[in-house]
View 1 (cartoon, rainbow, N blue to C red):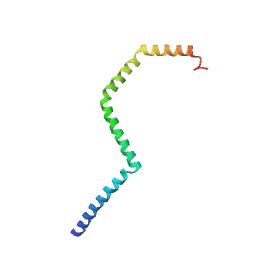
View 2: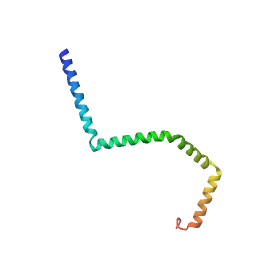
View 3: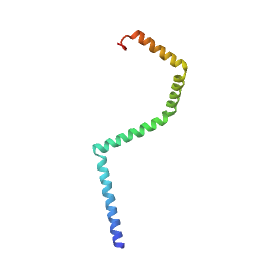
View 4: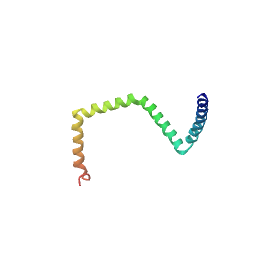
Length: 92
């Protein structure tokens, strides 16, 4: 029984070395390098987003306040009506 356990442990150590080498080789293929690049970009974007998130939230809240205001709807519709009357191109 112990002989089998020792043999299995030795095979496991050898397998770990082979797996490690295979992982290194796969990292150097075009696909492996591309995966590393996209992973780094994702990590960088996530870090940047975490820094900018409060500013983004404030801007979105500001837009919502403006869009909800009755004046925005009136100005938007008035602007559209002026455009339609002046353009002559959009509604041919």
